[in-house]
Image (cartoon, rainbow, N blue to C red; front, side):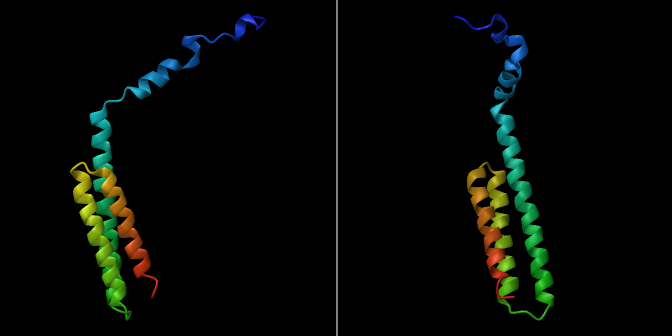
Length: 109
């Protein structure tokens, strides 16, 4: 070949070891982190929804708005529970649905 001799890749200089080390992460640790993330996000969104529901309940708004926040918080609480049990994909979709319920319920206000 007519290429330069110094254009060859050297494994010790290419960072291939870094890529291999990142790819060999323990699957149990990844699952544990996903469960904690799903549960934590669900708890956080549940508390935010309940706080918003209580704040909207104290104002003179229609009853639909606090009910929507409470319903969204309930969906997020269920997502936190099933996320802690390992169903992280379903928990993610429930978290999205819960936040959407809260957002859509706030529209009449």
